[in-house]
Length: 162
Image (tube, rainbow, N blue to C red; front, side):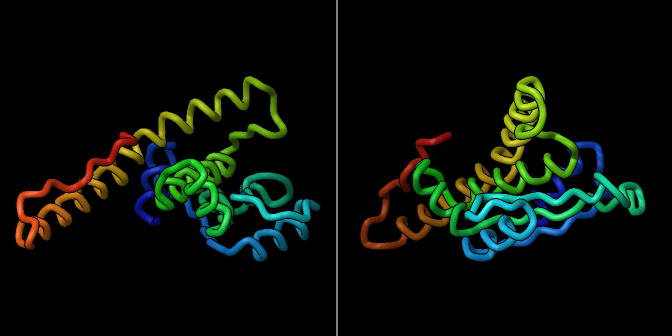
C-alpha cells in the first residue's frame, strides 16, 4: 500500500508529502462518518485534509488522513467483478486526490470531471505498475506449479479484464 501511495504522490508532484492510511471495517467507518460528517452510514473512503481550514500550512508536507472500509471495498470489488486489491488501490487514489484538493462533491460539474479524468490517468499507471505485474506474477506461479504437476502443460487462466 505504501508503494502505491508513494506512486500517487510522486505523479501528483508531491513525492515528499506525508499522509496516514487507516483501513477499518464498516462499523468503524460508519462511526467516523457519523461523528465527523453527520452521515450515519458506512461508506467506502473518507479523507481528512490537513491543508484546509484552520491550521492549513502549519505542516505543509502533511496532507492528512485517508480512511478506507475493507468491508465496503470487498463488496464493491465483488459487485464490479474486480479484485479486492484493484478496488483498494482505486479508493486509496480517490482519497489522496481529495487530500490534494480535488473535489467531486462540493465543487462544480467541471471540478468533478477534472477529478474523474485525473483518477483515470493515475489509475492507468497504478494498474500497469502494480496490478498487471501482480497478475503476471500470479499467472507464472500458477503455470510453474501446473507444469510440474499431474496436469503438466495446462496453461494458467488469463485475466480477461485487462
